[in-house]
Length: 144
Ligand code: HEM
Image (cartoon, rainbow, N blue to C red; front, side):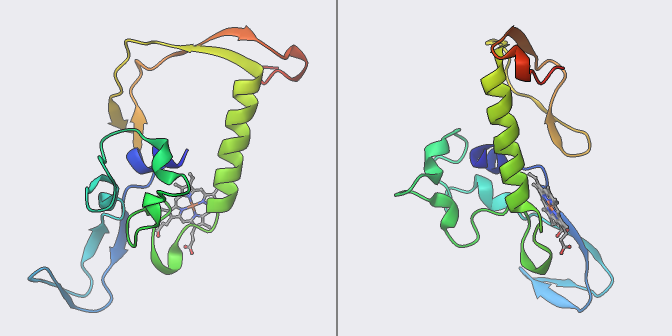
């Protein structure tokens, strides 16, 4: 789940309105200017993640913990308005995934190549399909 949030963050950036003039990378940014802060740009940097384009969930495992490098991992934003529900989100995602995988047999299309579209944030395009090939526990079926 964390590797999906790294490679395909739901909230890749944050918008802010500048309250005080400041300088950044040689540019003067004036008060009142709307800015987009690319909070997850670091997710794709080799300085932060080894072989960043590769799907590699083990990078979060004890011993590697690449996401703990300072400034590396920010799927929930940064600063005083960092997501207040990140723990709940992770619990719910894991719970729902576990319930779906325990209940259903699923088959994906092995020929599908992920293409992201913006709606408004990144999501797989309509060609992504998951076929239900069996129900393992009808009594607790999620389809009911
Ligand atoms: C994977 C799921 C989620 C992601 C990726 C996510 C991401 C974010 C991000 C990036 C922000 C910062 C927005 C900003 O600074 O402009 C944020 C703020 C917030 N999120 Fe989430 N969020 C998720 C789920 C949730 C859930 C489940 C809840 C509540 C149960 C929640 C509640 C909040 C709240 C209340 C804020 C505003 C915090 C503040 O302004 O101080 N989020 N979230």
